[in-house]
Image (cartoon, rainbow, N blue to C red; front, side, top):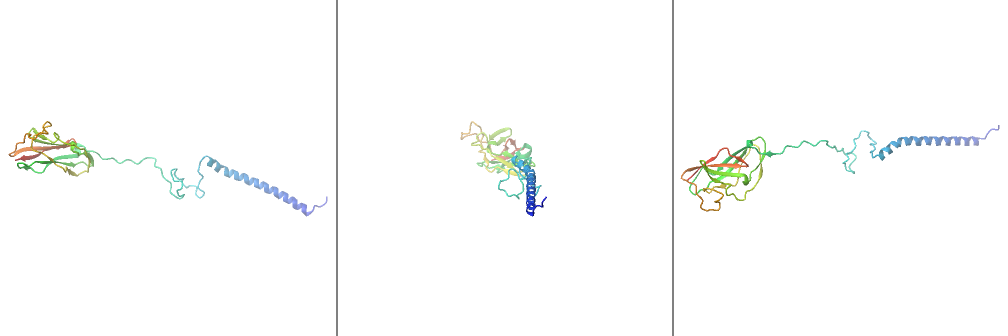
Length: 223
């Protein structure tokens, strides 16, 4: 057989080399598809791809702003709400000390007694109480005879919820004035109601607020 020229050998080598390149390219494409396919599947299912720099980086909260910084700390969602702090409760009888207060102990002729209420929270916690005039009551008695009630002819009663701090004492600012007469719901408009005897006569002032009466009464003398 005649010996082939060098040009023929070169052409054969080029054909073999080209075929080898095609095979290697096909293998490379197959490998790339095997690697890329899982990420495409995850993307189609809406699963975010992991960080390319750290595999254990926590994912951002779903509530995070879309333009938030990628380095921001993730938002932690609490699974259980924090326990609520107990609110201030209504005052009970055991929490209060109610006392009648007068501006004097004896009154000369023509002087009108001014009556107030002292209220002390003797409990260990703050509490609330309606201290409005609608729940205030003053009584003037002589022995068993009740001469006067502030509620008999009360005008424009009001309501006011107040918080009484533990261990504090408050006193009503606007005193109630007793006109030294006998009261009655039927005689509120009368000008000449029966006047209380004087001359050193003793009377006792009792008070109640929010349904809690004073434990004792305050004695006054009329002259």
